[in-house]
Amino acid sequence: MSHELRSPLNAILGFAQLMASDAPPPTPSQQASIDQILKAGWHLLELINEVLDLAKIEAGQAALSPEPVSLAEALRECHSMVEQQALKRGIRMRFPLLDVPCFVRADRTRLKQILLNLLSNAIKYNRDQGTVEVQCSVTGGDRIHISVRDTGAGLAPERLAQLFQPFNRLGQEAGPEEGTGIGLVVAKRLAELMGGTIGAESTAGVGSVFWVELVAARPPEMTGESVEPAVPANAQLENRSSVHTLLYVEDNPANLKLLEQLIARRADMRLLTAVTGALGVELARVSLPEVIVMDIHLPDINGVEALRLLRENPRTAHIPVIALSANAMPRDIEKGIKAGFFRYLTKPIKLNEFMEALSAVLELTGKGTVQR
Image 1 (cartoon, rainbow, N blue to C red):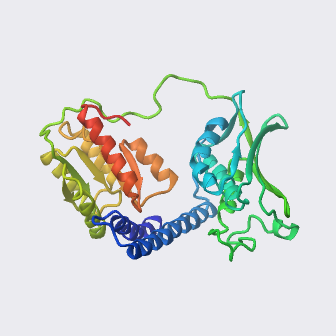
Image 2 (tube, rainbow, N blue to C red; image 1 turned 120 degrees about the vertical axis):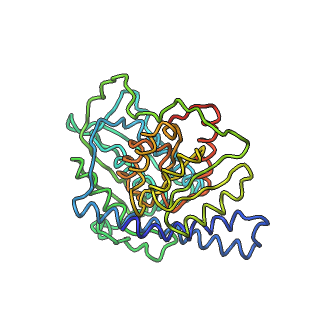
Image 3 (spheres, rainbow, N blue to C red; image 1 turned 60 degrees about the vertical axis):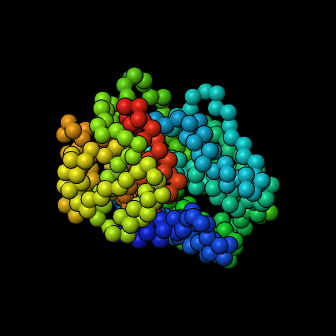
């Protein structure tokens, strides 16, 4: 369902982004309409992601990979991701200085998902010019307690008792902030799956404290080995010229049209397309493009299998392949990176993100080496 629900949004958001960045630019009235499409589209994507994530967890299909995770590193990454959200509201954020290495046993991606939910909510439901304070402490010797304190309106006791109920927004339905009431439920389920607990205290008119406790872990032993294999670096590219060739392997006509219009804006690129994995592999062998963009769901072989065939052929083994897929669950992305994709981008496409990945791969191929 992730693939089926996200694919139509790729066309909606993709073409809306194209219109917004068109030349000549849209009129103010047109731009206002485009902004509404994009705002509603990205919000719908967020709803789809949260509903599917909860469904997967409730069905017992949330595969986790527990490992020792540096809490300082996870908090640092989360801080950078919510910093702009806080700046827009003038909210000051305080994070602990963890001088002593502190590790928790958790799935790295899911831990950041929990922390991001707590931090984002603390900003979203805070007052303007408020504060968000993160604290960490050791409890009971083998548990790490992480709290996120805000200076928002707080919750009355009856509202606090309704926390962690799916689709319950605690009376915020008519408020200015959009949401689903799912994020905290997902965070609670994930914390429990990792052997932890989550909770909250709140005082109306003062603010709230949301906390999560996880099992402490010893720092991982350093082996000196690379965790992820690099894409073959012996790239001896043929047919080098000022015009680069991009091969797009995709069977959806709307997606093909979207990328065709996007690449048409670059005078230094030409586009080849293939609607099946097998045809894409053969076209890559014949035309030797500088870069391949690969869908995962294809009518014959899937994108991962097509990547394997490309790597096995000496003529195509060096070509960097960017995955562009509606398979957007964290495990899908992790598997894609391990399979050897240069980047794993998800649909709906973000044009800036796609163009940055394209520029990065062309810069590296120009140097004769491609590494992830």
